[in-house]
Length: 120
Image 1 (cartoon, helix red, strand yellow):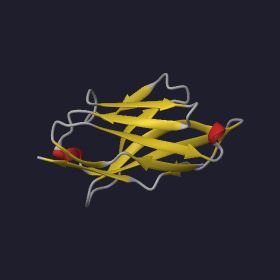
Image 2 (image 1 turned 120 degrees about the horizontal axis):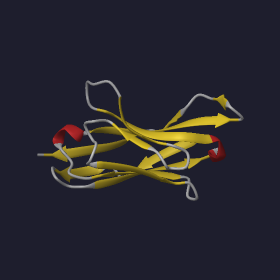
Image 3 (image 1 turned 60 degrees about the vertical axis):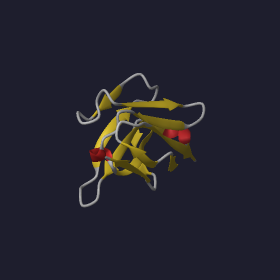
Image 4 (image 1 turned 90 degrees about the vertical axis):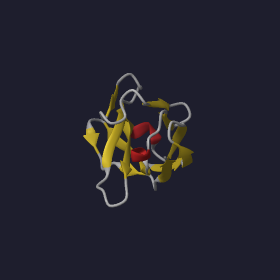
């Protein structure tokens, strides 16, 4: 599975951005997907996760109520709607896909990342 993020950019505090993650390859094997982020000098941290059918989502406390994760399986695309952005949301955002087939779990796939910069 290959993942390609888009939608990052520069935005003022309080603004919004929507990130997209387009999947290709063996997309039928994708189980859950998620977003992670990594700020300069920091470790990569988990942001949000969504299950295969999109019926269940989870968020890090730092983004809960401001970010919304969703996916359109017909388009093989996952989204992250980010509202009320704060300077501390500045980071490179990565999408992640966990693949599974017949009960066997495989190594996950990562995108190349997209930069989000929030100015104060």
